[in-house]
Length: 373
Length: 242
Image 1 (cartoon, rainbow over the protein chains, first blue to last red):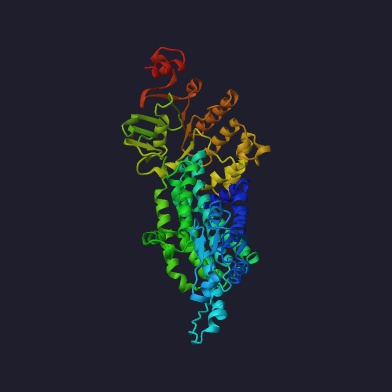
Image 2: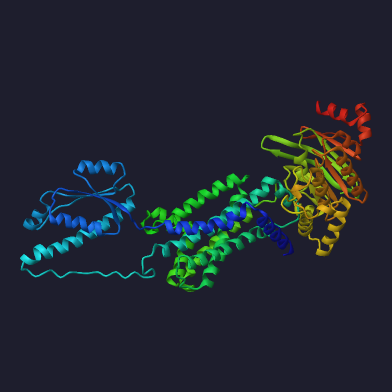
């Protein structure tokens, strides 16, 4: 036990003496949390909107006004022809083009139907989908009002019963993306920093030659590894704390569930990441190699964590892969506990999986660590 | 194992694939002896030493160090030896005192004992003014002397020194060898590799490795007589050139 205390003491001294690393450990994550949480949003705003009005009627002008009034669309430009509008889209000056054909108003009154042309730049498919949704909503509303003006008055048939769905958004009533993103980004920061630090720490001792010296001492494998990893476990918990405080102070993210539960889970989760870091450092000889491998995993873990894209929409094989993604578990738990107030029994299945993961990962790490040269 | 021997190697061999780095070497080292382990670069000295200190498993052959078997009791060997590697292996970002405390601690010395050792060591090495400085800021010669003292902290039976005086000035080298003599006189066995042939003359016995084999092993005096030359340098050249 005493031996571990000596190692922990040494590690902390080295970490806090490293003037280059300290800011990376504590300041960068805070900056990232603040910047990413504000920047990463699914909302599509400031859509560059253009229209080609070949009807020049009061109805067509009324429709354009609807878009004008929406807060999502701006930069209203008008083009004389479809071709001109297309070339503007090619240059990237325009995201959406609305085309109002000739006789738009006349057709509507006479034939009770009329067509609109809508072109959306769909290079970013997700954004295009959202934009299409906005446009549909505006056009539908416009359509309804028009019916009242033109059709409803002249037509004596009874109006069909309107089915109205009123969505109620649970757990994130205001649909605030920050509420959704902040817990997830917090997970990333805790994971990335602890993985990189633990992955590079032992490899660094390999590089400078002190690891060989350690291997010649009677120190036990388990003592050495616990002593090495414990400081990073503490740092991970510290990062979580800083992140939670910021989430509350800056973003006012609710903390519905139990803090104790969140800390309890995180304490197991960090073990998974540390085991992974150690495993990586056992198979690498330089910090660069360790860094590259750690990056490889982090990028995959992040993209497949359900943080940016829902796991449900991934192909089946990819969904299966996410079962091995610790970050996915943590993102899920974080959102469950913070936003839904899930209790111990709710998160138990995921927590048990995480615990099993931690045991396997650390087992592999200890097994692959050899006190030989 | 004979009463007086602290190291016994018999046909000790290390192969890396088709390459035999250490080829069936046999030798004994007696308690309190200063044993010089010589050889050209790449002759297999470091590999042989790594097998003896328990961080590399031999391919075949037998060896006992401090009474323990290198195959089965490597961890027991580690308790009884000190090791100073070619690379400087104290922590540059810890102070002199912190390094002593750390290494004392992991060898299981008590707090009181560490304190006493630290005081003694700092006085002996004349590091009074700089005990709280980072080791990284010390000149190489001081680092090496400190490193040697740290490897003796837990009072090992044998201390292995891998080119301890590489890159060190002649005055410091002389002081270093005085330290070696002093601890040998206190009963510590010294197993040392070096490329300086004047240092080879200071050893009680010297072995010379060529291409993985021990080609000569005796006292410097007898080796010189055997090869009919008047210094160790010429003995080495005759053997290493084949």
